[in-house]
Length: 392
Image (cartoon, rainbow, N blue to C red):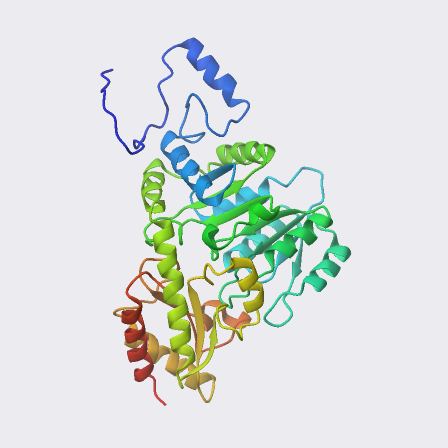
């Protein structure tokens, strides 16, 4: 086979399914080394095991996360599956605790996979109104003594900020492993591993890739034992990200700090603008001093921002009136702010809350805005036009 003496500044895109091992001694060494499940292999065997393009992106992600290792997979849900599955053992009755204010897909995974198929005893911890109580969480841990605690730093769509430092401390006091979904906060605002979390996951589809055209998930940690367990589980279940997507994600990550700053700045600008409108009943944004989680968010994020999501509720005389006004607003801004069921895109997008979350949040005038990286004045101009189109 002909080889080429070409050097590139970028990591090459390796699309190989299997990798050249030259001879029997090399093959023996590769398969022998693989038994120890190294984070970065010296020799590559097969792309479902490890791929050099994917590993390069993982190393870059670990530098952003401040972790000893990061593992990529196809989606945020795959990351959740890996992160939770490594704690499950045969003949051990698992009791795991989940905060109620987590992604709907995660809740469905808990009910349909963990509980119904794997027999996990899932217990739920709820907020008191629009905030979590550390005292109540301590009491909850005393009562249930779960093996694993899973929570999100910023909830969706009500943007409840958990006091992550205290939650991790309390969970560890009772001997629980802690898994944190940090998709909304991102490593820019908060790094759970620095405060003792065992694993942190992200839907890299969102802010880490940031352009709405790639699906990926990432699990990060510091424990070598958890790394080996996660590598083995990913390899055997097949949760590997494609090298093409890893290559694109690697490039997107290079602008992460620039992008995330603009997301957060635009969110703060829009929240302030919406709070001054007579057509808006309520603005939900942790950066507002009246938000129930504002004090916790200020302590946790230390002035770096309050996230890129703003949820707001339009005024209306009745359920039907609010529903009508929600439709009017969405139709009026649709050319510039489309309805797309994701977040963290470079473009500002929105989701109506009640049609998506239903009985959990029966607020027909409520809209979740995911602020993009456009000019902030242009975003507020479009929103202003949308509010003008809403009947009085």
